[in-house]
Image (tube, rainbow, N blue to C red; front, side):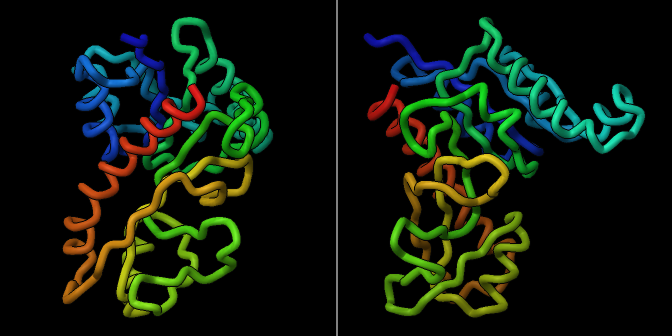
Length: 229
């Protein structure tokens, strides 16, 4: 049996983490979680990882800026560089970075540690809570019923507010390769159209959305491993 591939999962609160850990700990899984990192001051995902005996750390930008740079805004580039260096150490050395709820825009100081010859040139994928265009689709996404959706960026709650406000007929998650500095952009690996139907609330959208996003996130990790790693 082929050895499992090490991945590092970067989170905010950690909503994507339980599904990833559950699959990673199966004997037949194609990957294992070498490290979990959160940029938040507090994250239940970090607590979950430690409970599951997975290495986990906080890497908080405001704290880093205050303690090491005395509040200087130049801290951001240094933060990126040292985070990339830390993740790439031999005890972790991931073949793939998996971003799930990490809402900081990362730059080349970070991504240069993870160059590869697939995707957008960096071994990093992200889960976005809205439909993103495949190459050639332009600025509008044609939905299964023939109507169109704009490209919606931002965090999950804001995305769902837009879906309801614009009375879109479909919504759904996208898993994509990542680019430095340009968030929610990059080659699409998987996306899933979910019918809105009679849903009128953000919470109802979220309940329908979350298990589907979890599923295609895992499928995307496996697909990248199968094709490139």
